[in-house]
Image 1 (cartoon, rainbow, N blue to C red):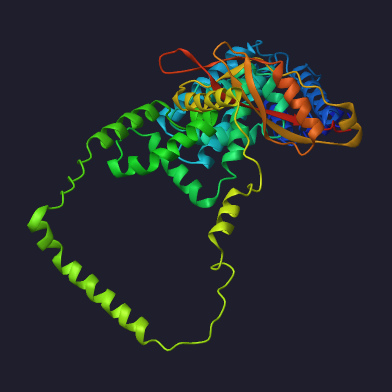
Image 2 (image 1 turned 180 degrees about the vertical axis):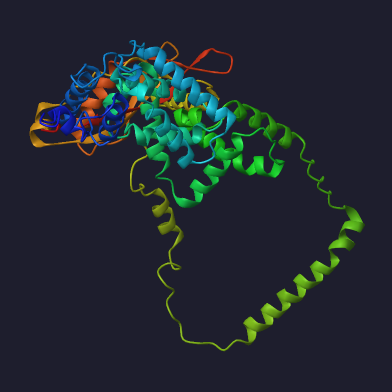
Length: 442
């Protein structure tokens, strides 16, 4: 054995000739973390080939081996990737219940510990585990999910590799919307952001806020429900939003009625009550008259232009047209405004946000590809009760009009599962669709 050359598969994994199967798996897992299959497919394929060859090498009998191979070297029975992923997901959920996650670092450690399991070295099992995390997030908030969401986005690189999420169906689409809304939420100014963060923390609990807090902070709750429906769905307890609305109504109803306005006294008693004020007013009038009569006469000076306008000039100015003619609103404009208002209110009342039924089929314009135009457009669409798109507008431009038009055209061809209220009935509600235009890396 001493004269035998070290196999290239072991050299690639930096293993000695006496390596065992567990050593091969451990070395492969360490190097897998350093390679992105999408950006370096050749490197990933080479690593995978070396891993499989090394497994075959350590499992195969060699001249120096004993007559009977050790139990550890025997080939393990094939496992079901789906069953493996489900088992690890259950273990992760149970660990979050037994020992709640209280910060981002703890959530990252839990995910890394699960991903380091040797059973997830199989690509199918690893992919199914990642999809299970997306489903777990999309199902809605549970204690600790406010930290699990950003941890998963960072570890799985969902914020830069959106195509991975498309493979997870509706769950991936919800998580993609969460990422878009999270980016918008983090652009808030510091002061409103602090208030919103405080409201989100309190919504996760069951304590009833004080009435003054409800009266001043429900505006932040309604803003979050309207502007970030998917994000609120996964990082806080949406059932508490309706409870807070009821508590606010109770607080408003419990406010003391304003004191009645006392009617002024009439007749002689009223005149006596007003006598001191009348006397003071008469004395001031006399003093003003004496001051005017005794003031020295000075030369006449013309009044400033702002004070010397005549009634005729004032009349002409009032009759002059304004800077821009007022645009009369048509019945269609009024109906559209009412529809937009109703849709915004429906988002706040929705307990389950809208989802894709058929995602947008967006065509990347060839001229934009040739000119290197890239960007991310956010398209806001009113999802009707029947799942069809209604009003569509550019919520945030990609920076290129051609790309914005392509995004609008793609969203018009999509269909949706409508948002639903607490009673389970479909609602008209806004839905923000992120459309990414990126050049393929060579």
